[in-house]
Image (cartoon, rainbow, N blue to C red; front, top):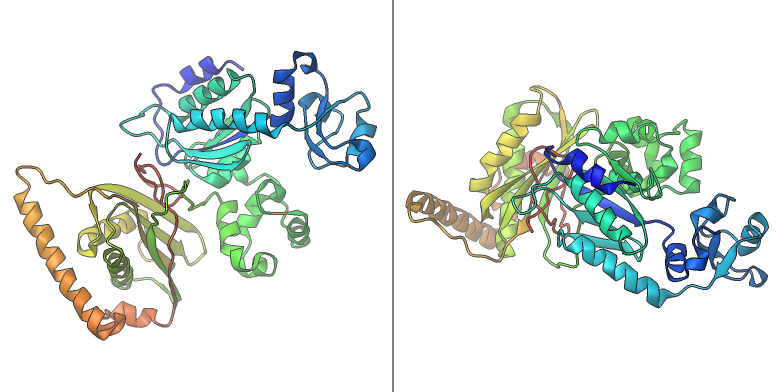
Amino acid sequence: MDYRAQIALFEGHRWEGRAIIHLDLDAFFASVAQLDDPELRGKPVIVGGDASRRGVVSTASYEARAFGVHSAMSSKIAERLCPQAIWVRPDFTRYHELSGQVFDILRSYTPAVRPVSIDEAFADITPDSFEPRHPAAIAAEILARVAALGITGSIGLSTSMTVSKVGSDFQKPRGLTVVEPGTEAAFLAPLPVRKMSGIGPKAAQKLHQLGVETLGQLAATPLDDLRPIFGSLTEQFHDRAGGIDVRPVTTDDPVKSVSNENTYPRDLHTREDIDEALRALAAHVGRRLRQQNLKGRTLSLKVRYGDFSTKVVSRTYDPPFNNERIFLPWVLGMFTAIWPAGRGVRLLGVGVSNFTADREQLGLFDTDAAEERASHEQLVSKLDSIRDKFGEDALLSGRRLLDTQGAQQETPTPPPQRPSHGDQPSLPDARR
């Protein structure tokens, strides 16, 4: 593959929204064996247990896969399918050495790297002022650097972890699959349901009994029909089948984001009711942030309409905030941008993430802004004091009174790692 041509192809193009890659090393264990022993290159190699001892195939080279051999296959069957295969024992010390080099390559572009196993990882490479290049150009460069180690990998690039993981398996080996923002649902729609991580044979069989063969059909299936199959994870699988995946790429950072969402007993249709609901959610998130002494830069809004279609948008602001009187107008503006007037709203959610330990630094001529923020902070401090003394429900808006009939919940999630730009079907991300 000519990675330089791929890099040049995307230079100068613009990417809107979050950019997440999933890197999956190609036949990793077998590739390492072929790297370390030139005699094995171009030959069918199987890494795993001995066929005479009821072993299992760990990895097979692509030359062996051509005969039908695959991971987790019985060694006896693999030997029957490919009797000329060369069997080698695993060398995990060597695997960890090369895996560490690959992950170091990823971390040279972003700190937001999440290893999933020894041979795969997610990374958030959203363009920003530090790295403004098109993420596809960066992905191609990463593949070139991995290839320089003597092994190869494949990458899926999209706005979400779900789509990127599917994409990394789309053109193996040495593949780069780019799913442009806004095309996630169309990319997934024709694919079999088994292509999505987490849907095993039993779940797939039950879906087939419902007439659901593809991810597009899964996304269009009513939630109530799916609950017997997925249980508490129904909405999660339903969303992801439609290209909506709200998970940020997390590291081991213990800091969490804070969000609050509510499903309403009846759909909200008027802007007055919706604004009141958003005020209640923002107030709850703001109070939780202050209780934990947290300030964030990234604000997210989740809207689920009456037909169960879902929209998630996020924005990143400076300076960091934890006061709903400051970030509520942003929430209302984000909602205005995505809401067709009069459309019923079933669920609303507000979240803040991308936390910072840095103190806010005001410019020389920012005194008016500083005074306004100080006034807001004094007000919310008084409101917090009242709630501390008399309880959370001491001060309730009209909509929050209605909300007590709904299923309100607070959901802490791991921190995202890089900034978001514009509307996107994902939870907020954070700066490097």
